[in-house]
Image (tube, rainbow over all chains, first blue to last red; front, side):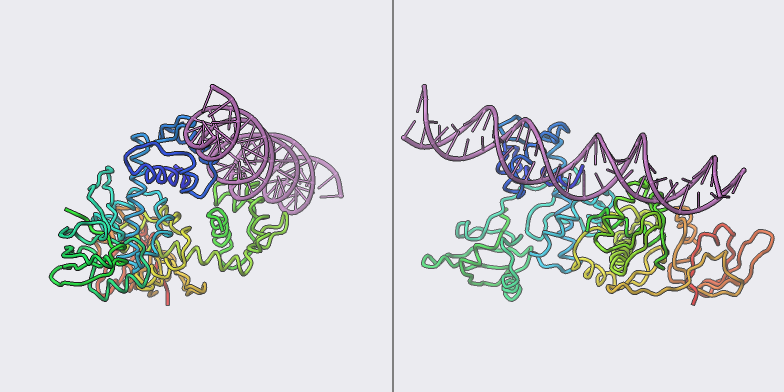
Length: 217
Length: 217
DNA sequence: TTAATTTTTTAGAACACTCTAAATATTTTT
DNA sequence: AAAAATATTTAGAGTGTTCTAAAAAATTAA
């Protein structure tokens, strides 16, 4: 499979939200910053290889084997992201571009050994789940803090737009990946939140709340 | 620069032994398992980019900027090899193919951070030197044990053909990368060698001696 | 030094991927 | 339901890399 084919599968997986719903040619073209006609060409190719179900003018969805391939690429991408952040000290917002390249390296042994080296992580630095070798992963509920009701408990699993300034803020307030967080109260006039982070109580603005993901349950 | 262009530069560097001597079209084709006509095409392209000096029917050599590029690729290849062996527990003989892919990843930051993560190694697992960021590296004398005179001292820096059986042998005899080795005596009738490895004396066959590299001085 | 052999290049085609422009199908509006 | 707008596909072309077959240059042998 070529890197280009892999990128198309990934795009279809994301646009179909992993549920296998039909994805339009234009949507794929936009996501991949390419032209609709190029998408059509590639869909024919992927259809010949039985990786997508394609009917002209109707859109495409991943076949079972297409979904397995997409999840395998996602697994590689996210494992490399963990590596870059945990072992090479990249910041959360710097890893995507490099991981886009690394995910196309072809070696099953490499990924298995990388997985082991990283201690079989379950989520990447953005809090997204890492599929297992056989394409399974926990479908947990991932929400931004400003989307949940008062009283909700969860674990900090990632950020949305990770600027350096924001990461510094988290550092200064001792909020880290894996911390248990509960929403204690919400100020109506500005949407700011009172949280319990592990044992401490802190107060964060709505902008901050709109950038922090927690996993519920 | 495309992966293909990078591979050609690497091949020319190796065939020219790093000294800039002229390399023939056929030699490149053989090394790269491609056809001479493909090589000619690529030489024109690389020549246009000022990476090689090319005169029809005469062969090619790397220009200064071609040499810088080649050394940069070599640096990446060898750093990745160190990573695979030291961090992911690959065997010496398993790393080449994967490193061939990894060396084409484009990110200066990645290589800098990898270098740091590995502790700025000077040689790869095969004992070959790793060029610095600016393309400099130690030109030490690297010889097989069966090529040196009795009395020669050196440091174990690698193996030639690294089979699992051979690596096991080294393990069992406590011979490792970086060990100081001296050739004490040579048996004429079978070419076997008496060595001092660190403090111990051991006796190895000529087959073993023909597979172990030491760095002299 | 001419002839034979080898090496290298050119010409032309194939494959993968992408694009533009034009044609066709679908959806929305009236 | 016809017209207009939008979405999608087809046709044809361009780029990068590779190949085969034939031509040209260089080298070796007679």
